[in-house]
Image (cartoon, rainbow, N blue to C red):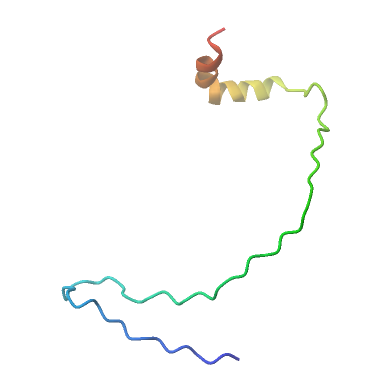
Length: 78
């Protein structure tokens, strides 16, 4: 079991007013971290989507309700 850490007393800077309630405790020093070794990996991307993706009328209505104004700006009103 690790020994308990002793907390250091908190002292405001010399010029701080007495009603300064800022917490002057310093954050504990973090141990240095080593970088993880990166393995050389080559990624392969495959496209297994069908040529035509089916979309229901309800899905179209949802997109038009949320993004209708954006679609009108991008593609013009039909």
